[in-house]
Length: 395
Image 1 (cartoon, rainbow, N blue to C red):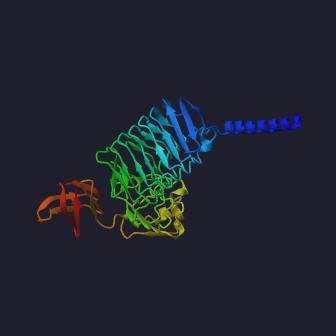
Image 2 (cartoon, rainbow, N blue to C red; image 1 turned 180 degrees about the vertical axis):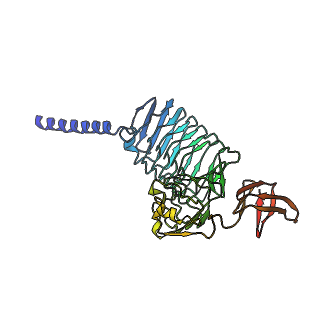
Image 3 (cartoon, one colour; image 1 turned 120 degrees about the vertical axis):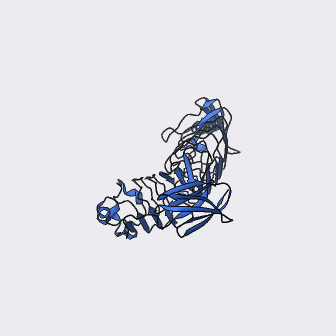
């Protein structure tokens, strides 16, 4: 009898010890820096409270709630928390609801990377920086609200958000890292709020304000061809990443720099026309990664074929043709309206005449080759240059 009792006590003690070990190995509450966290296993909700900045974590030193990330469905970060730490909620595959505090000023590097079930996120008004890959590979994310006051969107911040359809850059944004919205296969257009001093969207494509740098061509845009406006000198890293609908791209003579991975993933690109007589230096083959350059046609300015055929990376194009003119430029005038302006990209200097619907001439100017913009009052206008006529709506 005594032996049976002893055996039972040992078994009970073993169960208690196992539970204690499990609790120690997979805790449901604790401290992290100045903050307190608690995970509710019934509601699958993680709540973080306190005053101050959340610590940064990494692969070797993960967040203390890391073991719950896979099953967590709801996250509540309470007011008083001033920042979201690096790697804080990575791989939270089932996370569907996120509440962030107005006191937060920073969303850390890879903090929500690969939260594959997250479909919408509203960034609080106090946030001024979104870190690198903060929402990378959030493949179900369809909507993101960026606040006025946001200053920086770091590189690849929203890369591989395949369902993200539109995004509006607030007027306050000062810095956008390369590839911030790369490989977003449903992104058809990028909008920049009026008054932004650093960036502009032209026909849904993101440029710096001076339109000398092309930052992001939306990968989900329906067009099969694109002519980069004259005056662009720098095609930024990953700017056309995964633009799989594109079959033809034209680069103006002004281009001097083509960033790493600029056309990576453009699997259907069959024709590349360049206006640069001297091939720009390209250090890495990943500029055209996943592009079948051996089967694509590269059209270069007259007299430049030998230079391209000998240049690193460019020589990988096996079909190099020379254009019939000295510079391969925009083949025809391109005229459209956006953000209260008429945009005119011309292959050569030309006279522009703008009429109202009553046929009255309201503006006449001689525009140089490349991009020219004209501000007009609201209304419908007829723009003519040479034999090219376009109706535009300013609103």
